[in-house]
Each structure stands twice: as structure tokens, then as C-alpha cells.
Image (cartoon, rainbow, N blue to C red; front, top):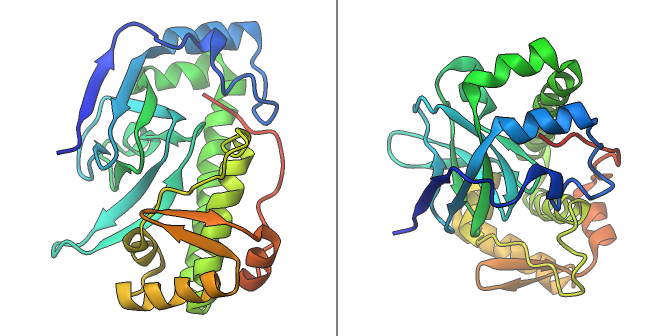
Length: 253
């Protein structure tokens, strides 16, 4: 059974040496902000692929920043049917909803082996009270999540099946490239299965298989065992009728 390793007290990756913080796509901290976040961080958590990081209905005392790996947010019906809401990539904030609402209304599962920075949510008020720049960052991240969910809802509600699939894969590909996952010189493999795609797009697994096959036949993607590789990103976006995410420097907590 996939496992979650409990947070370690020591900061394995000091905030001052965080590899994400060195990337130009993340806004730099002031020295004071960096000192606060370094003290705000309680440790790191390692989750294997398939492990549940946050559970719907739980009252977690922690929130997280994904340091490496992939995860996804989802909700389930009583009969077990699942709707994937969004995907989490390095730099994304997880668990803010529980910090504000008191109870998580969705779950988060690791899509690959993931490392998460752990923060105690009871210090969140300090950010807004003493560090307005960081408070704006938290608000920005929440607004960005809402913007992505708007686009996802539009896709599920109005795009045809092949447009939905093209949009989802192009969206994940662009987000991965934006956080440097395609910089190693190796092919970028998006670690999703056809079931993940079906649960995101609201399609049956049979319909999903046929739809993805059409994208493969058009030379836009290749499909591996539980992974997808984009071959023609611009053409994939054209099929989706999607113009991509705006490129701007973003916050990192």
C-alpha cells in the first residue's frame, strides 16, 4: 500500500537553498520574508505514488508546498466515483482550504513520488498580520487556483471529448515546463493513466481510450504505461482551442 512518511523535524532542504526559489519564474523573497518562511517550515513529508496526502473531511493541522513530484486534488461520491479537480506541481500550495474553512472538502493524492514542505496552519495569521507581501502571495495562489478551475469547468462543460483531452494534456505539459520539469534534456513524461484522464474529463474509460487514440494517430502525443508525452504542443493547443496560461512571475511559499 502506498505510504506517507511522517514529517521530519529537520529541514532537509533549507529554504535558503530551495531549488525552486532559484528559478526565475518564482518571485524573490526579501531577507525578512525568507527568514519567516524558514521558521514557518516544520519539515518535509515524502509520499509515494498513490498515497493520500490530505483526506476529504479531515481537520489537518498542516498545509504544504509541493517541493518535487506530482499530485492531484479530487472529490468522491458515496459510491466511490471520483472527480479529479486539478493537478499539483512543484511550487503549488496544498491544504489552504483546511486552514481557512477548518475542514478539507477535497482529497490530495500523490501522482508520483512527491516531497512536500510542511507548514503549521496555526501560524497563517502571522503572514497576514506581519508580512503583507506574503499574505498577498497566499491570496494570489488561491485566486490562481480559482482561475484554473474556471478553465477546467469550461472544458468539461463545453469542449468536445477530443478538445477536452487535448486541453488537459496541453495544460499539464505547459505547467510542467513552467517549473523546469522539461529542462533535463530527457523527454517529459506526464505521469497520468487513462483512468486519471477519464476522472478529470468526466468520460468513460472506453471513450477516453478512443479519444486519446485519436490524438496519438494525429502525431500529437505518445502514450506509455501510465504516462503521456507531448510531441506537438502548439498543435495540441490548437485542437483544444486553448491559448495557454499567462506567463508571469509567481509566488512561492
